[in-house]
Amino acid sequence: MIKKIIKNYKKPIFLYNYKKIIKNIKNIKNIKNIKIFYAIKSNYNKNIIKELNKKINGFETVSIGEIKFLNKIGIKNKRIIFSGVCKKKRDIKYAIKKKVSMISVESFEEINKIKGKIKIILKYNLNLKGGTKKEITTCKKDNKFGIRSNETNKIIKFIKKKKIKIYALGFHIGSQIKKVKYYIKAIKSIEKIKKIYLSKGIKIKTLNIGGGFAINYRKNKVFYYDKLWKFLNKNKSFNNFIIEPGRYITANSCLTISKVVYTKKVNKKKIAIIDIGMESIIRPALYKSVHKIVNLYKRIKKYHDIVGPICETTDTFQKNKYIGIKKGDFLIIKDTGSYCLSMRSIYNMREKPLEVIIKNKKIKVI
Ligand SMILES: Cc1ncc(COP(=O)(O)O)c(C=O)c1O
Image (cartoon, rainbow, N blue to C red; front, side, top):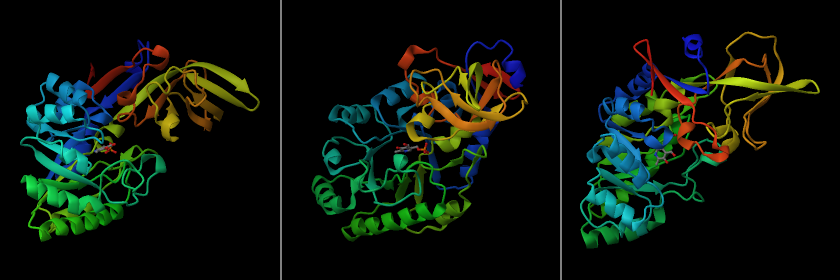
């Protein structure tokens, strides 16, 4: 199939596999009381969003821009959660006016800005570890995200005075949370907060677990959370759960095909310069992430640095990789379905790659 796709190759291609997206959703969907709101920041290709719209409960957004984008492609506001750490008064006003389904609040100050009827999620910073790289933690006390637990009493006083209803409690412990134990710790911690609300007569029955469900970038697979789903099923503190996966649904559904334009010999190794870089796949430069790279052709292996075309030395995918590469070869960069094209920049003004999906054995440009 890939050979067919590269026949008229002109520029890098992001190739999605519809089956994989569906399989990833099914890994979660066995659980009856979980609602899935896909985090569109991870990949907002409109065709993918439209496909997802048929399979999940809705979408998590972090800006008015994302809400407007979803509306433009026909997604109803009742299927949208509005979150984000820096919502302005006018953003909140807009979301309420448009009747989005829920708003996720990340500070005491923010609640004060909510004027009107909307389901409120109180998203807490639990000061917990998630076992991830420091660049992607979100639930440590020195991260900008979330309500601090010492604000709880102030919030309770305020919402009682203003007769504000709270729909859910929530947290976001970071991205790439590979172990269930971190989720369980976070849930136990938020149960304590729930008890404080309950002691003041405020009943909250829904828990919002932020993103974080991980994929294995070395094995092109998702991690499995069966123990967590079981734990949630048995949980007595909350009746319903909202999750906001991004990467878990789209990351491993996509690979990127790129061409080796030049090779340069430097002592014992070679540098392979490919026609895609940090403008479209920024994760290696941003957080030293590794995407698995293979050659479409078999070659005798030597040490190579694989670098992109951008005028930055950090535009490097891998250094000293033992791989066979010749000029003109096609390299396959794996697991590029999330936080790649959605983070694309116009730096160096390179052409946007082509996006293609394989669905029911048919190839379609999307
Ligand atoms: C509030 C919130 N929800 C969901 C996500 C999605 O995370 P992931 O793609 O790792 O599942 C993020 C990621 O930054 C987030 O900030």
